[in-house]
Length: 64
Image 1 (spheres, rainbow, N blue to C red):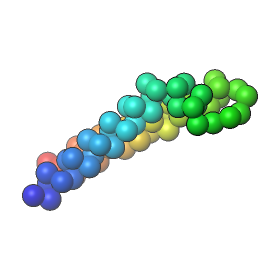
Image 2 (cartoon, rainbow, N blue to C red; image 1 turned 180 degrees about the horizontal axis):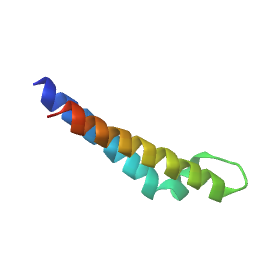
Image 3 (cartoon, rainbow, N blue to C red; image 1 turned 90 degrees about the vertical axis):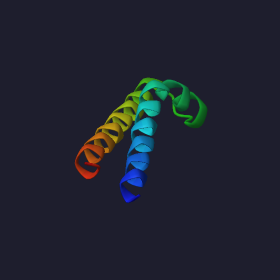
């Protein structure tokens, strides 16, 4: 049972990271008010990539 819960949590983490990668420009326009949107979207893409990688590695090692 714990294994299934851990898999679901890691899948949600991966999904959140991928959503940040693909919708970074939309999220930047909607929530942040600073002038340079390229820097904001690049930062969100990097954060999304790191979150997705951490979730994937954790799912690989913790849910065998």
